[in-house]
Image 1 (cartoon, rainbow, N blue to C red):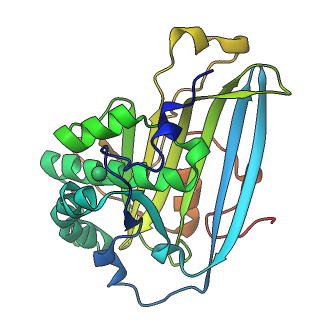
Image 2 (spheres, protein in one colour):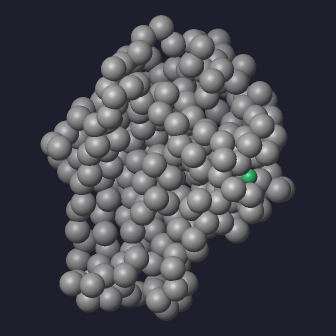
Amino acid sequence: MPKNPQYRHYRQCLFCSQEANSREHFYPEWAKALLTEFYPYRSHSLDSFEVRGTEVQKVTSVKVRTGDARSSPIKVVCSTCNEGWMSKLQDQNKEIIIAIGEQRKVTLSDEEQLSLSKWAIMTSMVIEYFHPNLAFSTFEEREGFAETGDIPVNWVVWLAAFKGELWTGHNHFGKHMFVGHTDQPQPTGIGIQSTAWVVADTFFLTARRSEVPPQFEYYGGEKLPEINMSVQIPKIWSISNPLNIPVVDDETADNISRAPLQVAQRDSRRAWEKGQE
Ligand SMILES: [Zn+2]
């Protein structure tokens, strides 16, 4: 079986053919300047659900490292992208994200929703590489997005203002489709994932489902689930009209982060808990 296309480009910039030589922080510099508290430890936790034939298996991994989650860098992009189109998207959206977080902005125009959605998808594409085995965007999609600014298919973005104090990292859930026998399962690079995080008191949630090629569609009788669209907060991609921005607390945001993949709370920890090591 060929190597997954999204692994092939891992040491290359996520968005172009240059080398990944720039350290990108999932938590942007402009937002870090607003923080008053830092935490000495961070935990990267994820729950993945591997679809192997008819079996769905849960895999939990928790890594505890020193340093605040919001200063945790990931070297997956090149300096041309980082200082070019990515920095432009940061500049275009930072004032509006701050205004949402401060609850000065309670509704969004279509243009604002589109611009924030691009920012959120760019950020998700970087965050998913904290867990490369659960990264399902393809290089072609990311490259096309970087070049044209057009949002690739099958992405959903939701947003709310956030009033809480426990969230510092992100909640990333994924279901990866494996094929082959249970003792030697092969990753397909096809899956469904969701990412939730808070920046400057604004809560973002994204979800993405791979296009499933016909040969995998009914593999082992198990179908890759669809994204659950019953989420308590409004989506901004695709655009909602009218849109009123609600305010969520720590626990509500954590519950909402489980909705797109319908992950039960008993199956995973809260976004701010360390979980078992
Ligand atoms: Zn690049």
